[in-house]
Amino acid sequence: MESIGVLMTYPMNTNLEEQLSNRLNLFKLWNYPSFQSFSETHANSIRALVCNTKIGADANTIDSLPNLEIVSTYSVGFDKIDLKKCREKGICVTNTPDVLTDDVADLAIALALAVFRKIPMSDGYVKSELWKCSDYPLTSKFSGKAVGIVGLGRIGSAIAKRAAAFGCPVSYPSRSEKPEAGSYKYYPNIPDLAANSQILVVACALTDETRHIVNREVIDALGPKGVIINIGRGPIIDQPELVAALVERRLGGAGLDVLENEPDVSEELIGLENVVLTPHIGSDTVETCNDMSDLLIANLEAHFNGKPLLAPVL
Ligand code: DGY
Image (cartoon, rainbow, N blue to C red; front, side, top):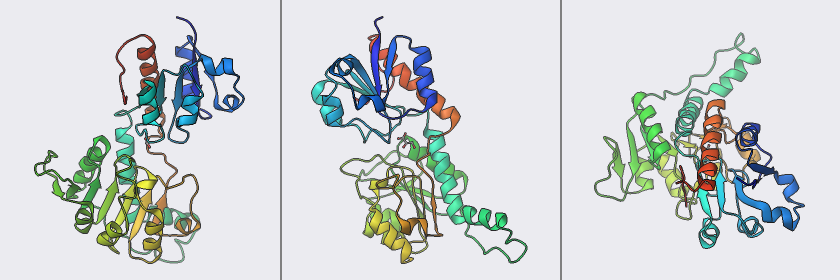
């Protein structure tokens, strides 16, 4: 097979780059920095675009690659890809679902435990040798807390299973009269869900419909003892409202793996003791990154061999 140009939109995860070069001797790699100075010939040779949650595929990038056939994101979320443009141009889009579900769900529970049991603070307490001088303040119990999950898809369901194992009653929002989600309770909307939860987990995709779906009404319904966990996307929560509620103690705490405008973090969030922050690392384990690389490459191979895609978005 002839050599195929692949453009990566970001300075790559070495693991994926290595596997791409090793496995696909048929592929020629062009990295993002050099993309800035691409000649027309280079742009013409690109048939696949590999992107991620940091740098996606916007309309300009897609338009600048006249022979682009496939966009593959190294993530389950595809909110950074201009799907409309891809659809218009008949470009295929793939993602990496399933293989990362466990890791993201694990992180959601880890964040909840970290907030309730104040794990980051207690780590600092021991390491700064305060243990000898004073008793550590009491923390809050996690087991048995009512967990509301916004987005009971693959990742949300995996979080629900884990929460249930901690004895937490799980509920979710559903407009349908007879949703099929096992024994979990459902509420007709997110404010009602929040009013009946002690922990609200954001696990849905970012779309026009879900942007700022967690707003002041939802935050106030959760109340001063409530905790929000976000492993979905930052803009699903109205962040200024979240920060104000945390500062004013109208909300008990938050565990956030994703932020609006990440990697920028507001000073206010950094200063809050009742907030635990992680740098969008939901799927970042060695094992899962290997699996994501495999799936992404398998999608590219399938496309260029005329076979059905393994994880098609479009
Ligand atoms: C993804 O893959 O979309 C997630 O953001 C991983 O955390």
